Amino acid sequence: MRLLLDTAAFIFAVVSPELLTKRATAILHDPENIRELSALSLSEIAIKSARGKLDFSGADTRRAIEDLDVRILPYTANHALALFDLPLLHTDPFDRQIIAQALSEEIPIMTSDEKFSLYQGLKVLW
Image 1 (tube, one colour):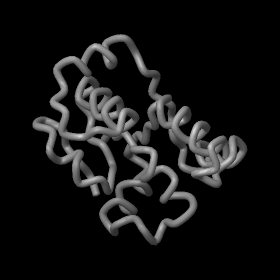
Image 2: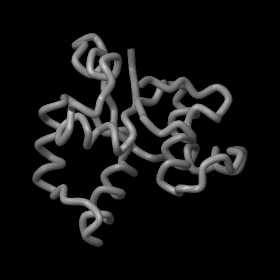
Image 3: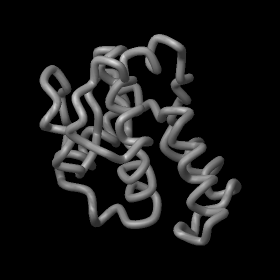
């Protein structure tokens, strides 16, 4: 199964794996699954790190990508255009873009954020 990790799930998996549910942990460790992280998450981590809101460096991010065997999903114009049709059920701009990306790609997203499940057609794994 192909799945998209939201930024928090990606960080939890590395820094605080005990915060993941048993289901999320099993999904992450299943070698048959293709784990993806949005390029937007890399921007979010870098911005929050620079502002002192997150203690997660570029080196930490690179190591986590390798350790979790995550591939980076580029953010495209089609993903951005999907935002026009996305209801404003979640106000965080990074999360909205990741939701639009998952819906456009028709892939489930791993997140603990309950607001993601408000979006029709989005499969949430947690």
